[in-house]
Length: 258
Ligand code: 0WD
Image (tube, rainbow, N blue to C red; front, side, top):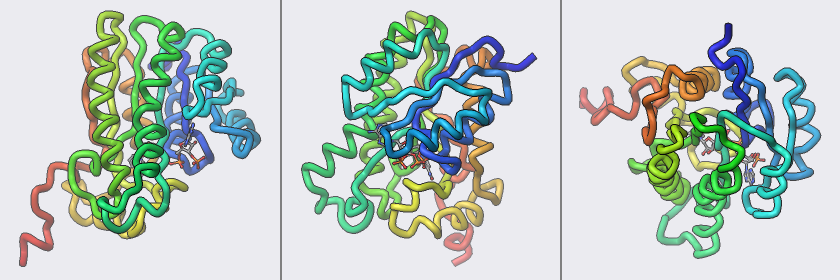
């Protein structure tokens, strides 16, 4: 018996095998979930369709969160679901270094639209697809509440995303639908590599975190299994850290010695 037997979960953001969503899909599938994967556009369609074969021939649909037509088409095609994974972010590369005060209006709007409003748009379009008692989760990062140099506008978008998680949890609570965020430690992916200085972040976490390691996609996927399952039936409006405890440090070991 798998923890997720009988549940259908829609997973966004599976751009490629290195995407965090791919690690999440792998663990959800391993615990018995039937998966629906989405792809952003034709550029990644073939890769996502090929990847879907690894997850029991998961159904695959287009979903560009920048387009309400695309979201409506997804809602019409997807059928009933018991879970939704939001693993989507986009920030112009030029806005992932330098000064936040140099961010353009356009760069701000794009980052907030794709990385934060997209959760509102997805839930708004899929609200009738979601069975009562469903679980919704979104990927966030420590840079939403703390200063992480160069994360800049991406962090500001994560702050909005985490707030959206709480308000949606309130909206949907009467249907027993839970909404949470997973705050993952740094994992090398196509998106994260765009952040200036990203390569140094994993080793810094491993050196400073209580568990003295960084995290993997599998670790994040295991949290997603818990959040998607009935084991977490009383957990909502929460940000759950999968970061080896790094977020709780107020001073890092090297600095403490100095
Ligand atoms: O260290 C990390 N990698 C962390 C990532 C630490 C903590 C959180 N996260 C978050 C990210 O901010 C994001 O919300 O996890 C989520 C997934 O990020 P990822 O796995 O690091 O990155 P990636 O594999 O690039 O997935 C992001 C995807 C896009 O990938 P591509 O390579 O095609 O840009 O977001 C999707 C897309 O699949 N995406 C969209 N999906 C639908 N419509 C759109 C869009 N308009 N734009 C981007």
